[in-house]
Structure formats: C-alpha cells, structure tokens
Length: 54
Image (cartoon, rainbow, N blue to C red):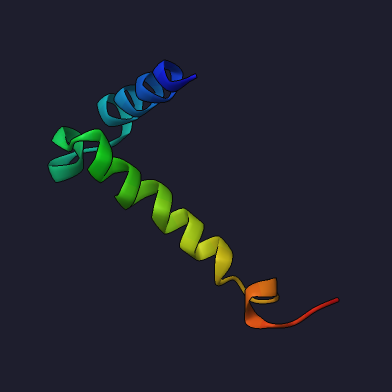
C-alpha cells in the first residue's frame, strides 16, 4: 500500500504540478496537498468541530 501511495504522488507531480511542487520531496507534498484538504474538511460550515451537534 505504501508503494501505491508513493506512485500516486509521483504521477501527480509529473502530470499536474509545476513550479516548486513539481520537484518537492514527498513529505512536503503530503503537507502542502493533503493536510490542506484535511483542514478544509474539518473547518467546513456545519462540521462537528464547530460544536454543533445534530
């Protein structure tokens, strides 16, 4: 599974990224791409992290 993740990151860099991220190390890519998506999800309106419960 880990090798699949590495392959996906490598293909993403090759096909979709340019500039600094096109040559970035995997650790930096994980932080810049995946953690930003997680932050957006956690802070979305109506999420449980705001203290609202259904």
